[in-house]
Amino acid sequence: MRGFGDLESVIMQMIWDHGRPVTVRELFDELSQDRVIAYTTVMSTMDNLHRKGWLTRAKEGKAYRYTATASREEYSARLMREALAGGGDTEAVLSHFVAEIGGEESKVLRSVVQRLSDRRPR
Amino acid sequence: MSAALLMCLYALAVAWCLPGPLARLTAPGMSARLGLTAWLTAMAGVLASLVVALHYLLSAALAGWSLLVEAVCQSVTGRACSPLVYRGALLEIPLAVAAAGGALAAVGLAWHYGCWLQRSRHRTRAHAEAVRIAGRALTAVGGAVVLDVPERAAYCVPGRPPTIVLTTGTLAVLDRAQLTAVVAHERAHLSGGHHLLVALTRGLAAGLPAVPLFTRGAVEVARLTEMRADDLAARASGRNVLVTALLTMGTGTPTPSFALAATAGNLTVRVQRLLEPPPRARQIRNWLALATATLLLAAASALLIWLCSSLARSG
Image 1 (cartoon, each protein chain N blue to C red):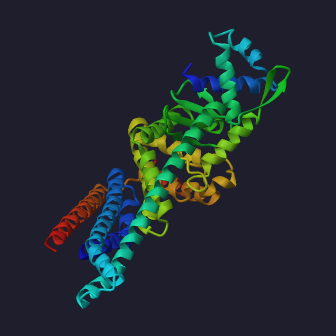
Image 2: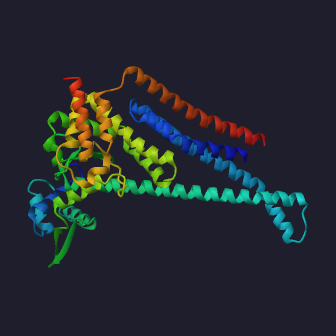
Image 3: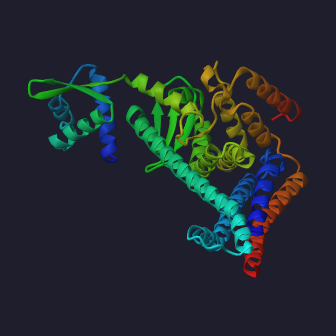
């Protein structure tokens, strides 16, 4: 376990895998099967995720039932859009390897490679 | 006063006349690191000149302040001053206005810049955190996270810990060696602190969008950091592997429209310089030109600041 952030990730994966509203108790029982963890840790982590907008919750009896606000695919797609938006509307500083390119440049590039490999066969 | 004017003129000249020629020198990316130094030196020189100019403007205005106050007080109490005092006071008014305007603009810009940097840091951190929650850790590559999306993308997010983000689309098209090259490229960004250079220059461009040195400079700095990371990745994984990785990532499958503008025109240059580096003599010429430009820029700023300080001392 890498730290507190990692537990958030683990809990979100579990909630996505469940695909239905879950209580802190349910996740705690599952988690404590393969690691030593305190109930309050699970509770506060889920509370954090709720505060950050990853989870919604509805009261049921004395406990809350938590649901993910979006599927993992939706989150991933959203993050990818943010990453590919570049310096424009997001101010996040990300260093890309290369973003996918359009047909025009793709054509130019292929011709460059073609020209080079014609001249200097490898 | 003349010192302030001199510094302002120098800053304006560099900010408007330099970007074109300097961009021509750095565009092919023959010496990416030196190119970065040249752009950063030019920007730092202009900023320093403006700060020094403001300093002289403020001290000139403050020196004349007593004259202005004296004239106003004398007039209010009904005693007349000598015409010389009035004439002097009249000259002090535009100076005071210019100094106040300059100081206000500087404070405003510095505030704007600080806020921009803070927002940028916040967004970057939030993105990294979200990626670590929504993605899966890739055990084969330390610190890498895979996002489950079909688009091909690879990028790094600075922070503690730094995160390298890959996508399932990327893993599907790259072989092991290419993946290593891509990761080496991202690691070069992280260890070189490239995000800092990009954030600092992009913030300047956002705060002063009318100044070519800053807008052009931000674009060139971003480009040069890519080339610098390419150089290091090529050294680690081999040129050919890196080039095939670049091409596979760039042209693998039909592409979503929102990704189009991101690096248009950039990839061709990067591939070309890797596959077909210019002759040694041209590289050396380019290196010498860039080194001279950098030294001249640094020397000119320093010399002017020194000249102005002696000018101000002598009167």
